[in-house]
Length: 236
Image (cartoon, rainbow, N blue to C red):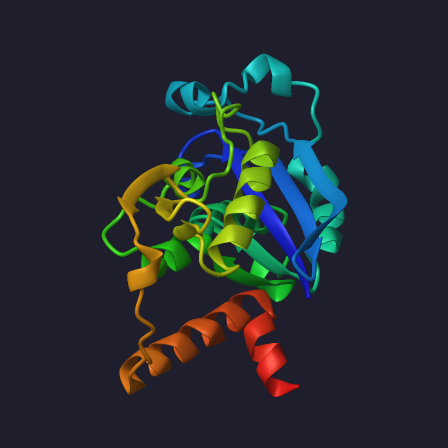
C-alpha cells in the first residue's frame, strides 16, 4: 500500500477569504515504511502572509518572492500523490486549501480525484476521546521527538506525523512491563506507575464483549494501514 503523509503551510486560515498555500511537504511510505521519496516546495502565494500565520511558521513574504507559483508545480504535485492514501492531520484544512488552488487553475479536478484521504485527527479522537489530539500532544503521547519544532513547517510536520501515525496504528504503546524489576511503566510518560508482584499475577480469559472490541480494533488497524500482522497470522 502506498501512502503519502502530507502537510501544508498557508498565508492564513480561510481559502474562502483568498488565503493561499505557501509550503507543501509530502513523504512517501510503502507498506508502512518510508521510502526516502518526498515532495517539498515553497510556493509564491501572490499575496501577503498574515501576521498571525507568520508567527506560526515564520515564512516571510520576502522569502517567498522568488518561489514558483502553484500553477507551476500543480502537475508534479498531482503526479506525486496519484493513487496513494493521503495521511493528513486535520485533513479538511489542507485539502480545502489544495482544492482551492486547483480551482484557481480552472481544472475540473480535486485532490479526492487522485487519492484517498485518512484524517489522523479524527482517528486520534476515536482512539483518545476527550484528550488533546494536536500533533504536539500526540508526539508526547507516543514518544516522538518534536524538540526541533519551534515553528511549524510542512515537511517537518509531515515527518513527525509519519512517526505518530505509525505508532498510533501499530498496536499497544501505552503500557510496558519491565519484567526484570517487576515495575509497570507508562511508556508515554516514562514513569513508574506501580510496583508489581509478578507471583500474584492472574491470567483471565476475555469475555465475549472484550473479544469483540479486540476484533474491531484489529479491523480498524487493517482498514487504516492496509495491514494487521495479528490478523494476517490468524488467516494463514
